[in-house]
Image 1 (cartoon, each protein chain N blue to C red):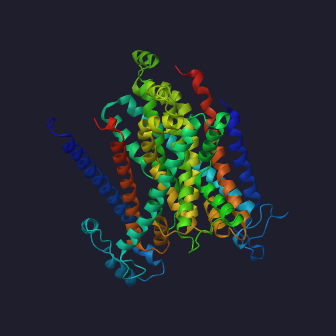
Image 2 (cartoon, chains in turn brown, blue):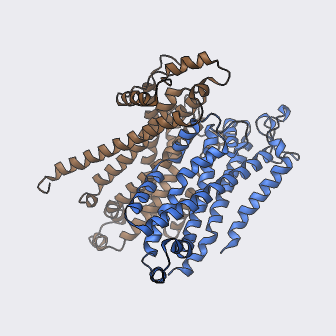
Image 3 (tube, rainbow over the protein chains, first blue to last red):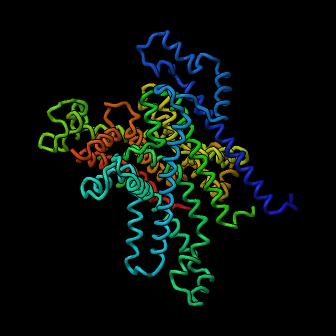
Amino acid sequence: MSSASPHSRALQTTLRALVEQLAVFLVLASAIFFALRLLPGDPATLILGDRAGEAERKVLRARLHFDEPLRVQYVHFLRNLSSLDFGESLRRPGMKVTRTLLTALGSTSLLACLSVFFAAIVGIISAVLSNGSWLGKNKRWVERSRLLVSAVPLLVLAPVVTYLVTCKMRLLPLPGDPDAGATGLLFAAGLLALPLSAQVGRVTHVALASQARLPFLLAVRARGGSEIRMWGMHALAPVLGPVVTVISTQLGALLGGALVLEKLFDRRGLGMLIVESYSSRDFPLLEAALIGAGALFIATQAMGRMAHLAIDPRVRGS
Amino acid sequence: MKTRRVIPLVMLLVLALVVANARGRNASELEPSRHLASPSAAFPLGCGEGGIDLLAALAVGVGKAILLAGAVSIVAMVLGTTLGAFAAQRRGWLERLVERASELTQAFPTIVLALVVVSSVKAPTRFHLAVVFSLTAWAGFARLALAETRVLREAAFIEASRALGRGDFALLLRHLLPQLMPVAGVQWGATAAGVVISEASLGFLGFIAPGEASLGELLGQGVVTMLRAPHILFVAAFGVLLTSSCLLLAGMAVAGESRSRAP
């Protein structure tokens, strides 16, 4: 394939990556399928409670196809998965699970995307500030605040900051306020972005510092380029790769944080869907929501890798 | 050894156990007249929902969190470090397999995995939680041990020991594992702190049996009653922060040594 043009090679890599992601997704979805059925405990009893009669349980088992052999169930599951049809909710008959799942996925992805965006901007700005000479001696405060933010877990930080901002200072509407709208979303995304921005800031700071002694930056300065031009444009471009990498390794943690923040802010996202379907024992909805969370994670990982390939031509060669 | 760094953790655990023993009953005792009461002489940290004693609830929660996190990360440390070091020593397919598996496991969000397992059992207990967290915690240790052993296996003293006739297993026990201790120690602290956060997150989301005192449940209460009784939120947040920081610090106890002994 040495004669292939770069375009067809890029296409090939993309296709291979796509097949790989699909395989991982299939493994994950199957793991969820088997975990929910094979772990000790009869799902029908789990849903109906101990006091339900045998007849009732039998009806439910038939409805959810639990009475069929596992092989048949699995084939059904794969067929439904390929057409993205997860059936209807148990608790609210007529409610299509797929539509509920897509709404929740949209809400969670919006929150995650916004906070990645915030974290990248804040992290890069803090790294540029702590490398440049604008702040003088005060530079170390940038570093200290990064350290402080990354030392405090989001689970502690988010509720306390929310209390201070919404209850004490009354700057923003209370969490769960239906009129909060965009302000609430931006606030939640900002909170979620804090730990990630500290990580991005630290990595970018080190990467920028290692660029500082390279001749091409000296050349920029010799040509009369300003400091902001030197750090913000010339030094930043080659370190974008590490920035993307650090973000994509932190995406799993970000997703976990998003689930917690959804509960805190009463946002109807994936986390709340899992919690609600669990506590109401809505089996089809729970299964779909867990698969959705896994799919979201796999998709974000793949996007991180693609972004790295798109940004940094040096990694495309191999 | 910087033993000083373990002192906060030990003190916190002892204090939590003593307080939990002395007033543990109050942690689940309901008394409507004390509902959301502010701190007073009899109840130094105030009362929570239904009048539970917050000091007792905090002590019980902290004690349970430390025990769970400590146990999980010790199991994960022993399994992960041994597996990683052994795989790197053997090289070949085993090394590649362990590397890929630990990478995948580490990238996967613990909380999603925990949700899968916890939601498939009827009444999740602390044993279930320990199993779930151990399923992911080993990966970090394995990756570190792999990376460190790759450097160590080329070292002259390993080669000398091999030439003297020591087998793979004896080499692992006598030379590799002791060298890995400092790195594994720091990872132990980080893993334990992570387990505390994960447990609290699950409790906060409402996945641990309600009524059982835990840091996460307390945090959930605090958020719900944020407007009327902010002291609950602060007690819970302080508990989580204190527990995770003490564990992190304790992990660094063996780290101080590494620089002076490195080959």
